[in-house]
Image (cartoon, rainbow, N blue to C red; front, side, top):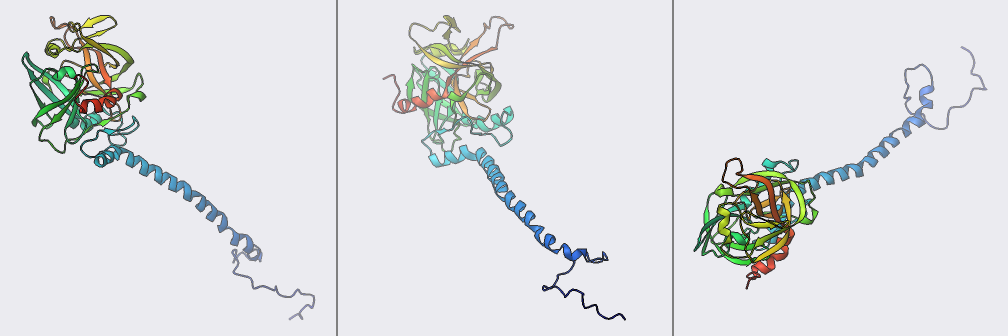
Amino acid sequence: PSPVDPEWPPPPAYRPGPAQGAGDGDGGGTALLTPAAAEPAPHARRRRSRGPLGLLAAVAIVAAAIGGGTAYGIQELTGNNEAVSSSTTTSVVPTGRTGSVAAIAAAVSPSVVEIQATSNSGRSTGSGVIITSGGEVVTNNHVVAGASSVKVTTSTGKTYTAQVVGTDSKKDLALLKVQGATGLKAATLGNSAGVRVGDTVVAIGSPEGLSGTVTSGIVSALDRDVTVSTEEGQQQQQQGGGWPFEFGGRQFNGDTGSSTTTYKAIQTDASLNPGNSGGALIDAGGNIIGINSAMYSASSSSSSDAGSIGLGFAIPINTVKSDLATLRAGGADD
């Protein structure tokens, strides 16, 4: 064997680790040790950078899940005597089904009742909206004006006696209290200030005594000046041609009489008929945005003219909410 070359370099001062490229037939693997050891660092940084994003995504998902149950949670916290309110962004219907008429009907129908009001001049049929689980119901004044007795029938078919707590003929609103009922499903009152022309809406009520009837359409116009009667006894006319009202200088569905009041209304093409008065006008998220109050009914003298023509009006829910304290105190008609 050849003698050791005295010029051969001494061994390295450090102990080399295992070569990443072992078996390649050269010492290149050892040269790669430093870069290879540093390679996991970028992966670690990428994993750390994804952490906050992943957390934000999780929070967003949780928030979306909570959104569907917000109304229920608020209702449970507020108790029996406080109406449940929300903005129009709250979704009462299940997540992912916003705008579904079927989902809206399933969520809100239990909160809409049929009203039978009896007076000296006869009996009228209307609708109402449950606003507290303790049995407060909002309806139109003209549905119960002058009534000696009022019966309320829920979506389950159960009938209760109701007491008129207060009325406000100037806003065509009335508040009832269902007697002996507990655990009723209160509707969520939305924010009519956020309603826009073209928004999808659903109407639920008892036209011609057909309780739980659901129709749909859009918001046709806003801030319509609708004039209605404030006289007792006028409510009976709704059995024939619908509640009399005036719009644009013309009277519809009969004479409004000499005593009238005017309010700003939401106009909708959702089909409304006599008996829908006092029922719910609902947005795509299942929030109540109006109380249906007036509708044009063509003459029933011929079949071609009968039925809704898509000209209905509702009292904005913000008007209702601002009037609740007055109604609970007995109304504005004392």
